[in-house]
Length: 451
Image (cartoon, rainbow, N blue to C red):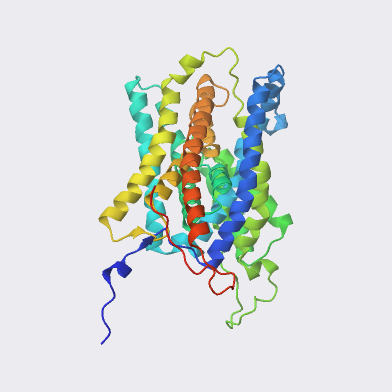
């Protein structure tokens, strides 16, 4: 009779290493988002310099320019800044929808036990920042309560870019956790935008949007990647969702959800893709479309949005009054303290009161750095700020300053912790990774202690 397995083996591992396909997908995402994060940062810096230069009027005029004044009947008489937020970000959210679908079907979220951690961590990382924001706003007389959701979001491109710069030796599990956490965070942010920041709701337009979304779904489910059909259907769905009063970026998520993740196989169960399909069948259409559109999202859509969203004029501003403004304090505190404590605390409680435990390669110090990094809330936080207070308002300028400040502080604190942890892992790798048989494969791996 075989002896029973030790109790330790029955426990679920938090942040366990991904399978090879997941690791390869993660590496591809990191490469794209690292470049995208750098471009996003460049766009934000250009916006700040331009908005505070002698040519600041040209920056304002460009953002307010309406390229299609005749689109009022379709609610499309939008200025350039709004097109960047409502139009280009729909591409970003389409990629988010594809990533969410992949995670639920073939990624970390397909297993309920593995999905519990990023979901709980994301919830903790959204609830505590919102509570901190509300507490600060109420103590100041209730000003700016409408912006309670601003510090709840994590910017996936910015955060992954920072991680990539400092993580030459950090465990793969941390990268996978940050990506999954950010994806779940985006799902909750999309829900918040749809539910709490929808004005002048028109249900007929939203119901009409189901027609192009349905046709889009039929085509992609059959493996048809005809751009001349899919792109017009996507534009029609976006326009109808925008006309409904729901934020138009939600259309991108809905379209992403319709795309199949798994490769199509012939009815007979053979190993070759079905005839008539495209080469996307070899890896799943979602992977194919994500590969095509992620560079557009990270390299064009998000940086252009940052260019028009991050430009706040500080000339003649009383910085002392600005930094003591309740809205600014609430957002910065939510991003810096709320995100990190919420994520780290919820993860600790999950490990404390369940049978789950950290993977043997990861320490709580590693997790502390990732929790701090999740406080980088740029793209979605600025978008929610626009929805809460309106583009160009005084409160909107305060939101931009607060989001930028909170994100920079979070990134700096996270980099400090993660650089220290990366050094510890590198030292152990140099000291303890041995190649006794000369085959180039390390034979020994020891986990660095918390320092």
